[in-house]
Length: 340
Image (cartoon, rainbow, N blue to C red; front, side, top):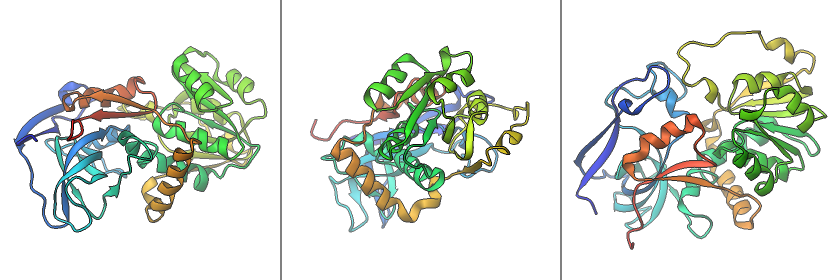
């Protein structure tokens, strides 16, 4: 085990798209857990698009980081020291911790990790926050019905790929937007999407939707915003539901983009648009994780993780989210198993 601890901090607030100068890797003493806490040797850490909002000096649903603060997010790791009766050294847990070699987790908020169900990175993706976001966003907000057409933007990401498969399990026709032919093929050939659109190679999103969803769009799960969402709004059916999960197309904008107003396009279809935060469903997380785990164990829910090697490359992994480097969930492998 390392006697010191490397940890990433926010070096400065970005103007527009972040770059490497926004991150500062510092080395200090390995922390000690207080009663009720766990010291975890981080095996994998999560990088997620919502973290871009935490780099701004504005109030949002996720508290912003101050310049100099340690960066934090989902981690999976091995308990090294325990201040709780719930877990002991050697246990594998998931929770919220620092981008670091070692993280201190609140034992009450930590969750068990079962490697027999899925590899550890899956607990930061389909069996973690992104999976629960997909589960509640689709079933509680979008409420798909068998035979309906569900369109997902950002469909090859951690949330979108899970949403599409869950919709297919409900008997829906599923159409995804993704940014490369590799991702399009993965969605259709491996995940069971009925159709997928490579937005990077498509000049007319409306025409592409007419081909992929000829009956219109009953449910739209929006992870992206921008021109894709503008096009989908013109193809909504009567009583369509729109679940707004993310707007990654705008996360690096310094000013709010303006253009033709889209609200009139919701009048004729009498569409419902609802934003969602997975934290609102916290009392039901355990049930969602159980069902997701059952689908994964049965082979009904596929998942994929893009693994970036080394804590020192965590900023690169984060920045890669905005250029579409990842297929499925983007994670960073910080350390190997203790036995290796």
